[in-house]
Length: 358
Image (cartoon, rainbow, N blue to C red; front, top):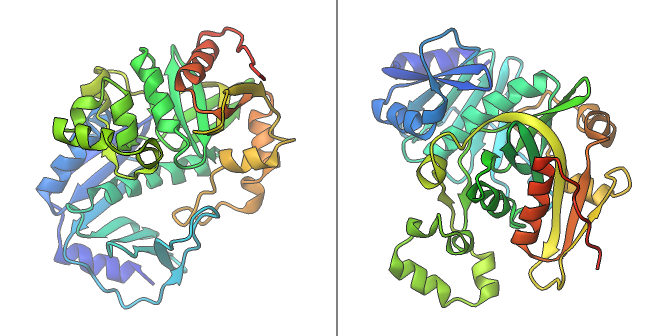
């Protein structure tokens, strides 16, 4: 039982402050024993902060030295394309505790509510991810499906951009935002058919980009110093493309207030299946039912923070039932963000997408 342990921790570290966040009408009250952490979270989520209201969920973030709960954890297998185990977990009749191996952060949820324990101010990004997982859990219980995609919107119409990690989902979506479209989501979207419409919900997380994306976008270049810019430009193109060094992009500051929305109607899916040395970019319509490998790129399994979603709810039939008639396009060959952005904008405007197969 984890309930008594959580009760003791809350008694030892009483909450001092809180903020209410509203994600597409789903309100979460976040409380902490650290005023500084509350301020960090209120700043990060500032476009989603709402006034006092009855919240659908409560998250408590206890900022403290790493805590040893004396648990025996099991490894959480990494995604098929990755090798490093990042998380481990322990299950109880009344909930689950997840431990991040690198940071020692603990996340408890179940009958006890939702609790983040550890050096929260240092690892605020992990607290953000946990809050977003609370939102995703709730939407999955409402029969939404999870996809590994970014998204942009115009006038309530959304396009989803899928691809393996590093394919350029965030870069393409930021190209679209730079053209005046709204940012919806960076790496996860939630989908559900309602009558003839496919509802899309974004996840309230700022896009995280690598230096190559910053250098290619004039709206982002001031995020790094001139000295950093010169050093990066001296790298070989292949090395710059592979460089993993994440920066959060503040959408309001870079593109204007009101450019971050969380919901809309899905009108097209674009899957990035290209590579830097791929030659001419090709764009063609595809059927996910016939391209299982592309479906696996698009689908995102809920993972360790949502253990109640079964295989039947995350398989191809469930996705086809919800998005089966949504146009899906594959971009293959070489990387061309302008060509891809043109195609996405055509879908956003309701125009025909011109396929290019040669």
